Image (cartoon, rainbow, N blue to C red; front, side, top):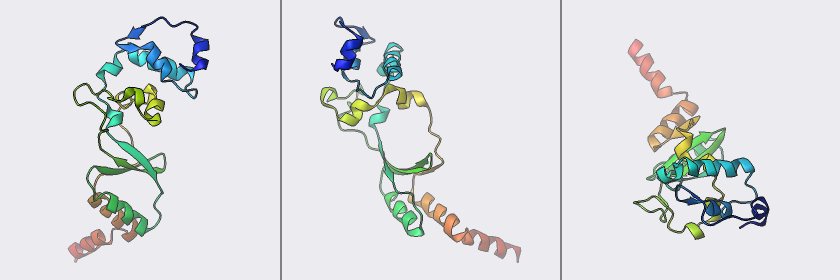
Length: 174
């Protein structure tokens, strides 16, 4: 257990658990960056049984920041990403991300638990329950592309000022 947490809890009786989630486990997996609010949020999640309802949503994708596209060629590169299975692109708070929708190989299919929990990567250890995908609800992306066709249409509108659509309108008037 982290020394700074030991100071908070002089003696932790074993096992204290809330809905099969050990308080010791929560404390051991907390990091110094964790503020008190996050710690209490973790306890609240466990107490409310949220962790037992978890289906591992955060373990079913990952998103990587990408450079904000500026030119037609940049957008076309992003269109290439979207030609691949299980890829989407989204813009959140002005930042562009590539999302890979693939389940972690260590997430169990039946119980949706981590099969390497004690050895899980640091990024998983730092994930706070306060950010849990199950609680947050739907994301509100400024832009969200799930196919190359959507990006192609966006490129046409952005760079060609939807010339094709305007031509159709002019032809129908004549």
